[in-house]
Amino acid sequence: MPSKPAPIKKAAGKEPAKKQEAAPEPAPEAAPEPAPAEAAPEAAPAEAEAAPAEAAPAEGEAPAAPPAEEPKPPTPPPADAAAAPAAEEAAAVSEAPADAEAAEAAPEEPKPPTPPPPPPKEPTSAPLDLFVEDKNDTSVSIIWSQPEIVGHSGLDGYTIEVCKDGTEDWKAVNEELQKSCRYVIKNQTTGDRLKIRVVAVNAGGRSPPVALPEAVLVKEVADRPKVRLPRFLRQRYVANVGAKINLTIPFTGKPKPVVTWTKNGQPLDTKRVNIRSSDRDSILFIRTAEREDSGVYEMCVKVEDFDDKASLILQIVELPGPPASVKIVDTWGFNVALEWTPPTDNGNTEITGYTIQKADKKTGDWFTVLEHYHRLNATISDLIMGNTYKFKVFSENKCGISEDATIAKEEAKILKTGIEYKPPEYKEHDFSEPPKFTTNLTDRATTVGYSTKLLCSVRGSPKPKVQWMKNQMIIGDDPKYRQICVQGICSLEIRRPGNFDGGVYSCKAKNDHGEATVSCKLEVKQPAVPDAEKK
Image (cartoon, rainbow, N blue to C red; front, side):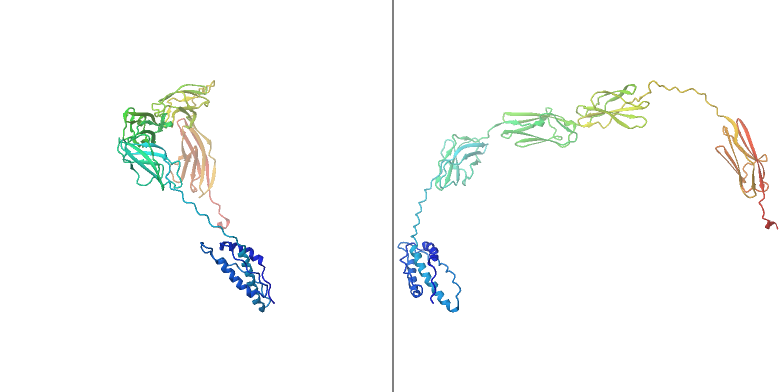
């Protein structure tokens, strides 16, 4: 059973565009549409005829590139293995009519336009605004602007040409084209007059030149010197002793000015002060400032017959010395009036004030009562009645308070007003008296072999001398007895008494005003013997 041919419209929609690009001339007439089934063998010759017709180039034109082969639509899967050859024949039959209709519908491609001829190469217009920017004894610096009209050829660079005044011998001074609009003409002779012009160069050639209106004299332009003293140096510059001084003073002037310095109208001491000068400024440097570095420093810059001067005042300061003297003028009630004189050494700057301190004589601790006080006299109040005070004064300046102070020689004693104590007059008491026993000896009993003590107390002035006696006999230094008398307490120790140590003991006290004696009885008993030992 013959297969149904593929639809022609879908293939024709894609094919004309490709045929239009490939075939420059209209395609020949398409072959008649074949029958669906039996005309399949005949479609092949028709397709073969259409292909040569499309590929044939027109006369006088280059052969066109072969059209790109259009991808075939996917073939549906065959129902069985026997249907596959029939499907292939049907696809071939459907392609032939589609190619024929695409060739018939393709329009004629227009011929590309002929490109216009390139514009002629023309030079630029002349550069603009040429003038001298700067000059010195050996060079001239010029500057200009780009040409107003550059053209299609662009701008490659500039050539700078010079010649001496009175001649027309122009010579280029730059070996390569100058890209920027500024150039320095170097290595010229001082005093020559030069005519200068600039030419723009591109592929079209040289532009008309632009020249300076008159010749330029090769010589440094003298500029009056001017010292630009900084604002903080227009007043007195104060620094502490030991500080580093580094002051930069800018100036202007051409050619390079000659810079000189003086101090108080005299040349500088190069051992103390160093000066470093450049084309634009001068530096005054002192490594370690001392008080003798203070003064008026004058800087002078000179160019030919012109000069300019500027002065600065340098003041080196340090801590002041103490006041020359301090004294107590008056004392009344709870107040003390002080006066003092300024210090002999103010630290090379004015004294800004004084500090007053007080100290109680009992404690010796110093306390500040007045600070930053500007007068040379003061009244110190609210002092404590009955105390004695000392005062000292410090000096003060911009650097600070003096290290030492001056102490007033006098002392201020605050008395109790209205109550003056008068001590009564007493006769001196006579404390001398004869000896008197305040505690007497008491009778005691002891046992043989057991030590015992006899105690009594005595008073008298002057201190009485004490002697111990046994049965009216002075005991003396007998080692059996130990005699102690401390603060009027008298004791006699009898060590291990025996049967013969019993008796009457007496203590006798004697001084210049008399004597006194006390006595007691000592009984020495035998130790008790148990009844068992007696039998």
